[in-house]
Length: 455
Image (cartoon, rainbow, N blue to C red; front, side, top):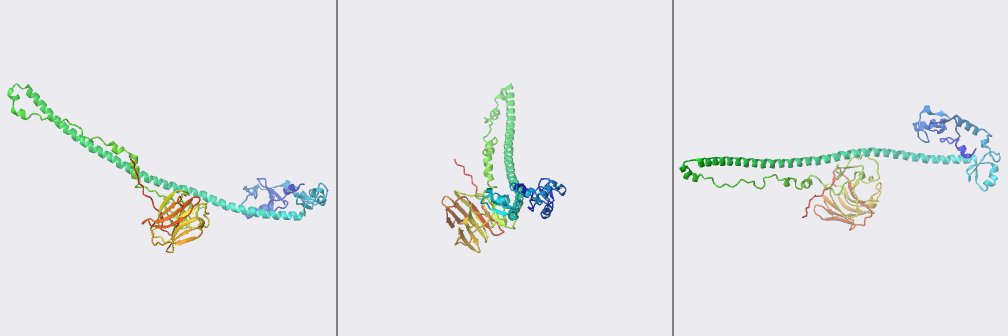
């Protein structure tokens, strides 16, 4: 029997020749005692090889394999006899990786080959397999841990989607309310103008009717005089006094119609222009996927504060070692500004972080920032350089990242006075960086929105 065929007679668990073998529905066989011990240890009835779940009733004795193993283990059985030389196979050729007898050792086929006693080779192989099994089992533990993280991430994705949808709906409801109010105001304005001008036209029509009645009376009186036979009536001096005066023809005045141009002209633009008073624009949006689990971000992602540590799934973007968060957009060129309100905070950091930095460890190699800690303002840059800043109180800070001029500058936003400037050739993308050490929020201030109409 070939050595590879002999391997098929060994239990995958104990690595010995099968004793009382049983077979599972998945066609894998094991020693009956080994399988029971495995299930007791793992507390779940699965195939040790393919992990398919099975039940006790599905386990059957493998009679054919049992008989084959018994035949293999019989003393003097042909399985242990060299087919070429008829000698007992007691050696193992390391070069050919096969069983051999003492005659095989001296044959030309195994010239200058290395041999080991069969028992020693089997023992060594078992030790190597045991070590390999340990490595595989440790790897399986890692896979199990990763699997748990993957499931946690999948559940958190659902939570994120639900929260995002709720906030989107709230924002659109706010815009809908604004548009509904604006529509109501403009509809009321049209109706008001309609009532005013309709009333004016009613008054003009009433006046015209009165004038027409008076005119009709005069027409009838004149016709009556024309028919009179008395000449004195025609030549009466009073008739000259009562002669109908010359009246102007009734006419419509300018502005009588509804001013449609006023109500409809640039309607969407005027509404959008007015909408800027109820919406805001932030030059930096914080990325919750980068936030340390101890940080809490506002719904609009423009402010951050320190809070109770939350259970969040691990992801490559998240910062763990520092209680900080990054902006959602990184910059690799151009000139960028954003203002941060620090208020009366006693612990904070503002700056930028290079994208290449490993966020699970030390951020120092790619972090440029100014900070307030223990009542002192400092400017800090890689590798671990720091400098005291001659400033006392700061309420609002302007961060200016000018990648074209290779500068990162900080200013007092209230006085426009410079605080500190780093000169550095940043490589790759850099992200806005905020470190928060208190429960009061640090806030990215919105920029003013203006509309400029060019002639």
